[in-house]
Length: 375
Length: 263
Image 1 (cartoon, one colour):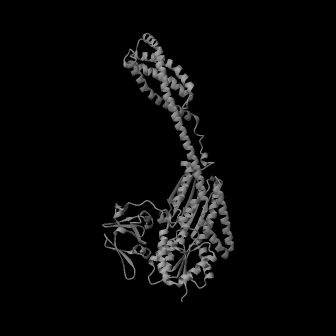
Image 2 (cartoon, rainbow over the protein chains, first blue to last red; image 1 turned 180 degrees about the horizontal axis):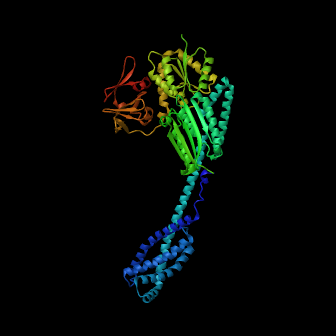
Image 3 (cartoon, each protein chain N blue to C red; image 1 turned 60 degrees about the vertical axis):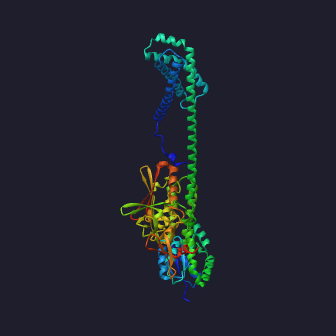
């Protein structure tokens, strides 16, 4: 289940959608028509100079344009109206042409006569005299143009199909990557684990009750991160629980060098969030901000509601962003971890979420996540 | 013989306490003369106390255990034997590989008495043969540095340096650089005619340079090898480098002395 599904799309009513569709069809029609004009011109030249039809090129061109346009309006109009952008069945298409061609021929001729101000009776009878030849000619041209347009429809249909396929596979890929990133971030670092165990070992000898407490925190932390690695969604309360266990472990390890505070308003307890989104930012703040700072520092984790957005912050008083770039004998670059967070946000929310990292005054860094608040 | 003395550097208080306890239990004659919780203090304490053994955590604030060891190797006085170093680490694939390769002593956390005892035995053996110690350490540190992950990662090589010089930005072709010198927060780029600052560290710069041409010869110096006219060893064994296009000479630290061995 993808949280971006929760984005409300009901606002988009049917009217603008249909409006958009008509517009698209109209555009399509105009593009098709642009193709017909040169064909009409070729026909006029053919009729004038090859068939020696007794009229000027201009007159024939007007006739040709009128007949062509009428045919276009009738046939392509019918095609778009009946089948839209879809591919029409071939027999229907041919029927459409055979029926449309004579109508276009006479209707187009009438319009041309009207436009050129010619004697209607005389010209029309002339047209009827040549009807057989001209009808064959007009039908052939119509078939040819239809074939062209039909081919193009098929081509664009195939293209659209390929694009849809591509978008689908990209979405699948995104989802797989998101799952992998989540798993990656839920992994307990061996370094962290062994250091914690070493602390436990030390504590057992000197302070058994504290050792017991630490062990409880470790169990809690491991259980929570294991379940987080598998879940699609979790609650803020659960995430804060996990972070509390982690911070408790770290504060035993770091002693006086680490202090922390977690602030989750009760009304946000049950808000759902993707698991392991905030935790890496916290670990980052500890690892790069505080652990490598001699005097240590303080960490604040907060969740606040801002209208219909959820704002999550991890604030530390550590070494700050600039120092973090000097990779401190580490192999896990900060950039990799943060890039993972960015990737996940993009996969989960698209442009709806934000992740910012800014300097904290007087020292340290603030990591800020802004997510759409799912209902 | 006076007591053997050791310094423990470990940032996590419980671990530090546990290591000291374990050492006192397994090696009662060893005197722990200093316990510090960061790399900077580790270097300072080691230089002032001159102990025989150092237990260095690898991940420490201020300086990593490896950086602290490197710095000590450069700054250690000539008249005192260099301490033996044992690195302590929880889990660090790169470091472990490097240690195995360079035959450096290390102890894994959580500390295991049997493993620590073994290390102690080895330390005792090595302490008996003081003579070998100095040479050994230099090569070991040299090897460790070569194995450091930063050096292994081949990143894009620089061809042009963009450096601030007053209120101008100067573009310096890389081959014109005579040497780079680390200052507090910057790196000073020195060519035959001028100097300019870049806002970076030598550590970040190093992987971006061609290692055949640019040699690190000191913690704070990287030199263009084509600019080296001659390397001179003085009566104390200290190496200095004379340059073609500059009058000043550069110090070579013993960690990098191997670069100037005869073919």
